[in-house]
Length: 507
Image (tube, rainbow, N blue to C red; front, side, top):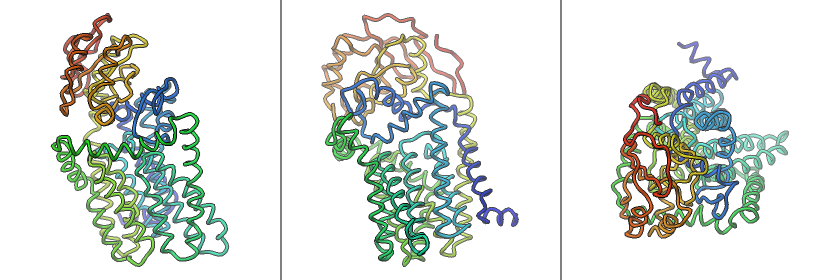
């Protein structure tokens, strides 16, 4: 056992390869797991981005930066050969491997070989646990990869600037850190963690470190300017993009607060429980203790700032979705390395092992379901419709769950495929009702939960549904409607797959 521990903490390249291999193995069972709402939805948006117009991304409006949609366009391109599920999960795997490798080099810069393996192991555990939806291509994972890469480059630049022989290279590395940090923001607009870490690290790091800030900003300007040029020339305009990323979020928080708080409060309690179960809470406590011990170190203060910002960012959103916890992965990985540097090796070993064990248990628990390709209720609806739909069919899902449309092979004529944008930008359903009354109304209409959610249903909307649609199926408790003037070869009127696999195929 001691020999294994010595090898793990040797810092050799073979150890890094082993951690990357473990990361891969933890994610493999989920290659064929059903699409999540965001996965299917962003594939839908990415696919329609280049073929339609009128909104932020083609005819679709989402409150996410263009960098994220570029990632999903890559997955969409690969899906033609690999299928949606495998394409998404392989892109997610590549991003996770980047994050783990970056955490390794960041940990090495903080605490040598032991810090490297501690940081990489924490990153592998937190980005792979099914509890945080890690194996899926969540909207947070691309940002985590770029932010962690930015931090690793910032630490490398700090080391280089301290040595006369390598000082000239430090500026270029700082610029690369800026590029990565800006790419993190272009993946998820609240992920300014890379700037927070580098800014604190260099502002209190002395005059030589101050010089690196210019390189950081210069590098960051490149992807930001590219996004601005796209928005001004091919996109909706810089003002519209800014409003989607930041103005909308302010209005959305108000809508969430005005709505029932039962669901957010329930998710908040679940979120807290997941932090305990995954070992993230223990890692956070370890990070705080390590920061206190090393409180005069610029790296410790920068780590503390990144952790504090992550907590504020998660809490400020008000939604408490579990995958939001991925924002903690970078500061907690750095915290593990910092704990090694602070002389907390034994406690760090325990915390890292517990986090890995939790992830392994979660993977083993969900593997039987994942490998049998059991559809979720949403993807089951999509499969039922796909068996009956014809090329060119369109659809709308009330409210949210855009993966239904992707699995069904339907295009989305309505710009708001998620519930929150609909509630903020079309709260009285005027645009939706007008679409349902129009000659080119959607062929398919799906009631995922209830048309009355959040009290959003209007008399005009109800009348439009009653006039133009009739129910044709109940799939796993979700009602499927078809246009009155359209005929399709329909499957069973009541259908739902078995818990561990389909027992009845739609036909």
